Image 1 (cartoon, rainbow, N blue to C red):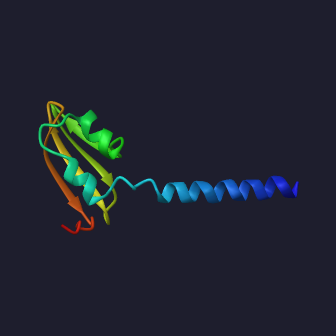
Image 2 (image 1 turned 180 degrees about the horizontal axis):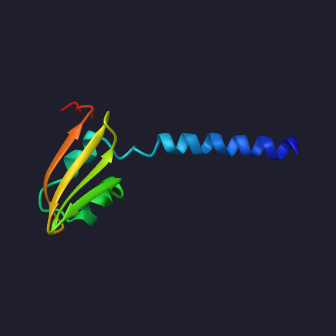
Length: 93
């Protein structure tokens, strides 16, 4: 019984670590790969599936991340028109 409990705690720890890595796509490098005209599928190939997407009548807005660190994209007819970021570290160029 002790082994099963230890295994459960180990699995829970691994899942917490993986959840912490979930936003590894939120980097300035990935933000710089985005450009107007990309389809939503192309943007999601860079950032993963949009976490919070809303829209109506051909317009949509998707956010990846949270208040502290995020990337936001606006789409018209499934094509990106603008991107914004918050809390990403600048790359040293």
